[in-house]
Image (cartoon, rainbow, N blue to C red; front, side, top):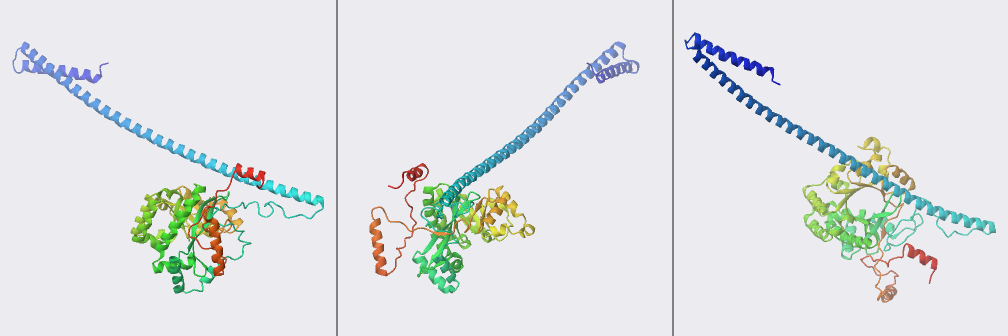
Length: 486
């Protein structure tokens, strides 16, 4: 359909051409035929000019429409990408929620199974008591353990090269406790001399304290605790001589020795359980010493396969006072796959994003600090929300120094997944290395003769821990128990 503007332009062009011919005829004195020809010629030029200008204008309009269409397509693509990203985020959240729900269901199932076993033991014990009472005989000590241990304290798993020991409440004072008490009466010079002698004689011992899952109380990690024996076999805790070692410049050598022993222990632990891990403490002075750290880094590079199970632990004060050298050394360890832990936490002013970027995957907080009601007003975050906050950045919260069942119940309300303390197990020394299969009897005889000659019944000290023969577990153990000895 012809537009009104086009008709108006055509009329105007005809009027202009007719006016031109009329002006030429009346004013210039040109004949009517020539005036008509000139008017037609002018009309033709006007028509051509209008056609060309309309064609150019149409091309311009098409180009602008194409540009508008391109911009609209780009906006639509951005909106589709945004919707895709939001959908992926929702799917990942749903997956995490489902996995967390499945983990909680498994945990509840495990607790129910353990409670079922304990209830069965209790039922057997009650039935035996009823039988004894009905027979009129005084009740004897039951064979089971249900009447001796509370239902909420399943036995903590200890590797076979750690000595079995009774509960701390019934245990007599250990040589370690006696040594720790006597350390306060020694001067710094005496402690330094004993420390140098212990390093030369290889009397720096490793004790292991387990970290258990809550509430199942299954061993997941071990922390290597350093102890020193002097020439009289008195045991000193690390807090008694670490300060002296740092002042004397011996802490780097000690950390190197401890790390070597920790790797040996981890290899022995992983023979039985691939999911177990070991925490090894490193001092700030070792991290800042480039020469000592280079030796440790070479050693850790050689044992890079153990990085997922080997956790390097630092104090909270160390992370808060990192310099350029320490930051570079931490980055070198993180680049090789090693994870870090923070202990000696004194407050809950924690930046989880910064710690996660540096490679921290565990934070150990004393149970008393978490359960202190005064922290809710002085801390940046309520202790009950700390575990969830750290979990968003891939950091696990470990409650340490747990000494009572009441603390465990309160910590479960805070969603704490790991616990450590004397309630579960104290630090225990490694069992001395056993003799080989061929020369075991001769070694025992030699030890007995040496003990008789020197007047002491103690066996010779051996540096490396040993692995006991594998124990029968599962169906094989049940079959052996059913068959009896022999």
